[in-house]
Every structure is written in structure tokens, then in C-alpha cells.
Image (cartoon, rainbow, N blue to C red; front, side, top):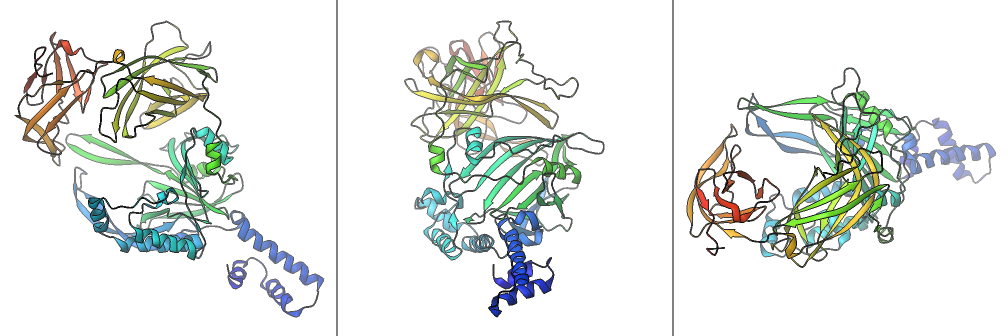
Length: 602
């Protein structure tokens, strides 16, 4: 900030005092009155530069980086299908600083560079095809770099504006460990109108972090929404973050300044044309922003027609959320050392009064089911838990944990799915309950995930209840803690057989897409392989995107006793099947794939 700019920023001080203070430096004489005036100006400077949240009121215009355009879907009048796209005008806003600040300028120049550098992604496609995308240091992982030219431009901006890179993501084992390291274990203010639950988060070595959170709002007359969610971002001004938001220039954006119950000055902005709303605060050293789902989009399908209806948060509810979150937090800058010095994971089976044990493991090599038993303190009914502030008649089933991770110590997973469902344990006790964890993992080496002789790691964090009532989700934490288990895969804990049902290619029907009315496009395909396992199946056809299932019909396994089990994607809809009792698999067009007799093609 230049001297003249600073004086312009002090417009709330009488101009004659500013002029007198400015003249003091040129006379060389000591004047007590003028010295006190200078002190007043310096104090005001400190308020502006070091504690900007106290006096500086943000406006959308302060954050605007560029005018742009974007493509937007155009729906038919009845909302049944997408008729095409249209080009709309947009504004791009910075979340890293106000106009003129180093962070803002760097983000603006980077945005302009990326927009013009590879607009049709031709450079990326060519480098990706050639396998020549460089590996850059982890401190650059937030920038999505794929060429040396991009890295050179980024380094140029870091030097030009004296900024640090965002840095590498820090690996905190639990959300509680992360919040403790950041010194923000309490993000909710003392007001009790809105309940705030932090659900996930990440921190970076440059000092930035984000937290996702759920909100329960008071149900009042005239309101349509009583739950919502948001993302809180802390972007330091000495750190080069490329965070920005693009909004359609609809002309109906509303913005207003609001002083929260805890005394923070924030900017609230929203539009009925956008599901997102924002609450922003200039904290001097950082921009603290909270993106909120301010409009809930509800999709309906009836009689072949699809349409959307909307539920809106009120302006008062936006202010209630602003009151509930502590925008005056003083987070500690965390480092790799903080992540490395986390407390060791506890090995006890009992945490916070809740005991967890692994009871059983079963797998077919591709899907694993782990039965977990949970015992609550005496007197706690965990099969049906009612919150103290629950609405009349509401009951809450235990949901398990905020974080459920199944990992391999040496092999990398490219994703997958983990389900967690209750199952009666049969002991007749109210404070015990079994749960079945169903894991389907995709490995980066494309090999079978669950191999006999290998051991997986199971990590659970916290035990919670969760209840969904229509579009509203309610949640309560029953126990805080960590539970860690080895999951050994042995020959005895599964059926690893795989039966090939296709000895030579056959023609069958498959879905290759969908029509505007939602019905499947059916075509003939060559089925070259269909492998059946105890809990899953896989197949190969001669068309890349063809699927052996429809919106209304899926293949099924038919047992010798006539019972049937549907196959959804690759998963058989039952705990497991006895492969010796399978008669055939029936495809959606009625084609039957018999199971070979013992010793044939297995």
C-alpha cells in the first residue's frame, strides 16, 4: 500500500488531521499536538492493515477479477430434457484478496494466463498421450500444472508478488487432530440457534486450509430449509492461492454487510439464480470465506417428465449461519512437523466408552464384507438413538463413523466404494449392534484387490448417528475416538473361485445410452466374457460404453432352487451365493448363461 493510497483509505478521519500529520514529517519541529495526531493516524493505519476485519467492509466489486462467459444448459419448457446450451455472461471473483493486493494481482494474472494458454486442452492431450507430463514438487500440487511453461509462469508470479506457494497437503490422520493443530477446535460461537458440525477438512503447508460443515437451522414460519452445508476456506494473503468463483451475471445478485453476533464484519452475497451463497470476511492476514448451499435444487420425475423445484434459505438464515460460525478465529499455521508429530493412533478397542471389534471377514477377492460389532456403555440404546433436541417422534439409527478408511499398506487404490449397514447380532441387548462393512476397491495396478496372504488396514473415526428426513439430514456424535484394525485376507475367509460362463462370443442386448425421455437405447453387442464370483461378476463386450443393465431391469443369478439375486453393476444383491448351487445367469434380454458342470471351463 502506497502512502497516498493509505491516506485515501483513511477517509473516516477528518482530512485536516491527515494533512497536519503529513506536514509534521516535513517541518522537522516537535509539536506535541501534531505528534498525538500522527499517533492517531498510525493507529488507524494499524487497524486497516493488521486488523482489517474490524473496519474494512468488503463488497463484491472489491473481489472482481474479470468478466467472462460460460456455457449453460437450456432445458425444454417442461424440463424434460436438455435442448442445448447458451452462452451467458459471468463475473470471476477472487477469494485470495481485494483489488490491488499482491494475492489478488497474482491470482488475476494466473487466471488470464490459464484462460489463454491452452483453451482447447490440445497441449494437455498431446502431452498426456505421449506420457510426458512432468512430475512437479508436492508444493505445486494445488495448481494442476501439466507443463514446464505453466510452472515457469507460476514461479514468475511468486517472485513478482513475493508470495509463497500453497504447499503440499498435510496428512492429518483424524479431523480432531487437524482442528487441534489449527487451534480451532471450537468453530461455533456461543449462540445456539444454529448447530454447526465440521465433517471434513484439509490443511496445506503454506498456511491455507478448508473445512466442510453441516448446519441445522431453526425451523421458523416462512422458512423452507432447515438443514444446509458449506465449505469454509482460509486463504492467507502471503500465499499464492488460485481460488476464485465464477457467477452468472444475472443482475439479481444481492449483497449486504453484516456485523455478526461475535462482532465480525462480513459480506453476504447471494442470488436466486445460483445455489451458492457466500459469507466473506477480510481478516487482514487472510480472506475467510464460507460457501453455503443457499438454494436446494429438488429434481422430480413423474409421467415421463422431469422438472426442478427450489427451496431457498432466507436472508435471515444466511445471517444466522454467519452468527453461528466464528469469523474471528485465530488459526495457527500448521506445518509438516505438526502432521508428523500427531499422537500415535490408539490401539485400545474401547474409545470414549464404545468398544469396537472385528467379528468376521468374507471376500471373493473383489468385494469384501467385514462384520463389525459395536458395544455402547450400559444403558445406551444404539439400535435406535434419540437426540435430546429431536423433533417429536424422530428416531436415529447409528450410522458408524465420520471417516471410514480401508487401505493397503503397499498397493494404491484408485477409488471404490464402502458401505456400512446394521445387522442384528442376535444377543438381545440394546447396547450392542453388528454392522457389515462392504468394500469394493479399484486398484491402480488393475489386479485383484483382496488377495490371500495380504493384510488390509481398517481405520474408523468417531461413531455417529445420522437420520435423513426427506431432504433434511440430522447427525449426532455418540463417541469420539479412533479404532484401527488389521484385516487379514486368508484362504479360509472367502470363496475365491471365478467361473467363466461364456466359452465363445454370443450376441445379446445391451444399453448403449439413454433417450430424452429417460428410456434406454438398446443395441446388439458381442459378449465375450462373463465371470461369476460369490459376491460379484464382471463381463466384457465389444462396445466400450455398453452395459448389460437397464434403468428398469438388471441381470440376475438364478439358483437351482429357483431363487433369484439381482446383479447391480458388478455386485450381487445378497451377502454371498453358493456357487455350487447356481443354475444360470439370466441377462436382460432373456439370454441364459448356464453354469458349467464341475471341471468344465472353471
